[in-house]
Image (cartoon, rainbow, N blue to C red; front, side, top):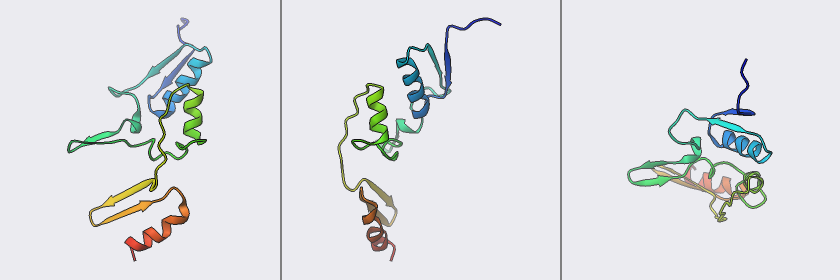
Length: 117
């Protein structure tokens, strides 16, 4: 058996794999990150449809707000994460409906009932 130059091999360059690889590298480990796609980021890299860019993933992962889990992870990884608190936090656009979901779940039901009586 031959000795590898890597202490750790992380399989998958999605947000979890990137976080694990970053934390391990910051801890002084030699890390090899393997990703099957041409780009890392997994579902967080977004898509382009009809000339519009849609950033998925982090916008849908809870805890990106100040003091949240994603913000804390970025702080540990020493990654600057620009955050703009907005309300509604999520907007669901369907062919005949548009539902605005506020940051507080208390406001969800009136909005859902408005669109879907």
